[in-house]
Length: 338
Ligand code: SF4
Image 1 (cartoon, helix red, strand yellow):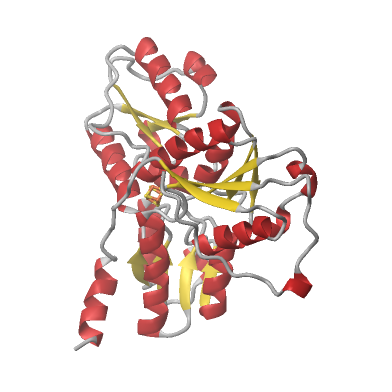
Image 2 (cartoon, rainbow, N blue to C red):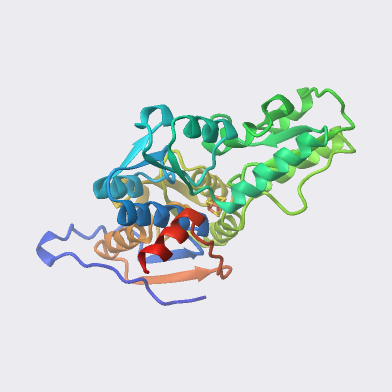
């Protein structure tokens, strides 16, 4: 266990809220938590684009699923739109970490937009698999959540050959053109355990089904779920910092609950309900892959100010993954530095 406490900003004593004697005396932080390499890259991409090209820089959809991050970038001059049709011709647009369907690239080209693609390389990997399986004549079974941007983008690679499956029950009723020619792929931010169950059901139903060489659920999702399992066993309450539309954050809440803790998803410390804290001795904190660390720090401060005297970290696995910035940004950064 790494016991180094995070740096926290203290509020002036006069502003401090009263100590809740029934609140937790101990705060345990999951590690790893928060930003993954794909989110880091996507946020840096927009920041560099603003520095290099100036305002406006358009971003199709939320660059990552976090309200706080989106608002910060908006303040710096990024303009978030739902579709490329909203962007004036010839302007610059960044595609989000969740990836886009080929049709989005085509529409952007028609409008002569200058595109910077911040799709996470691990999402691109799934797109490549979808295309490859479809070209080989397989029905592609995508395990994922309907309406999620990543799912829309992946399905767009081979819409006529792809079917979406969300639950084990849906496997039962699934019908495909040729049961001997099926392949599965998955959204990157699903529950590892639930997805395993769905894959097993698919293998039972389609014994010849094929799949990706390595898991599609990404390292960051897997590691954060592993860490929250450990955390949930040691805490009565686990708070997950993340936005409501963040798939991986919602999964962390589910995993914490499945492993014995009460758990809530919150955007920030202002959403903590004091009633949750009654009788809690140890509160666990983690954050989704798109939630910045400063939100964790503010939550730790919130608990310190209410009497928590021990803050430590529960490290489950070390991460050192980094992705290179998109080629357009690397090229223009190199040109700018001369
Ligand atoms: S959660 Fe995984 S797939 Fe999504 S951006 Fe992060 S590393 Fe990439």
